Length: 284
Image 1 (tube, helix red, strand yellow):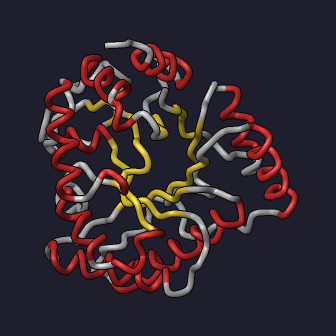
Image 2: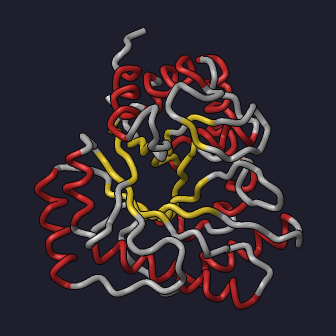
């Protein structure tokens, strides 16, 4: 059965994330290692790091995933923003290494109207710069986007272009597919046959071996709408049939799936995990 988890808070110290993930009933979990809305990140106190590592080992939760903050833009044409983004990525990888975190998820960013080719060149240069100095174990996962204006990574061909430009870094790179973003970008997941067609496209373009994580989110927008709004599992446009297909697909069975669903009067994190587990237990 797939390993399911949610994004948990690190308020009060990064070491608190593990207990919060356990309380929610997670098999895996995701964090922001620092404030995601700021460029500057405070150093991780040694005591907090030690507790995090000990609790993570004891918990059996795997994988632990970190997500890049919101501000960095690896495709930016603005030199100051671009330089700070490259620095932020390098710093975040080092934080992951210190915490024994398996994966760091990053968006590819926006070319800000400069065009896809220039955006791709900026992304590739950013990754080359960072990897020239980093030799840790954390794998950087490129996340697909919903295809909002000027965004990079909404197509498998965008992700392929980045990966093919960095053949020497393949051991450090993988892919995180967000189901909401896939649907919004026009990749259909709503039925078993539609899901299989999308996975076949991924295999042909990128390769199944590079798919290392799923962000499991329903989508408020219509197929191909580029409307990036997450919804509770089964209550959006992908629907229960789509998520049953995703959670029961044999090619995805060994992956961790992290939910980034809303918390509101309809459902909380535990509620969405329960729905996902119920769908995953259905034997076809």
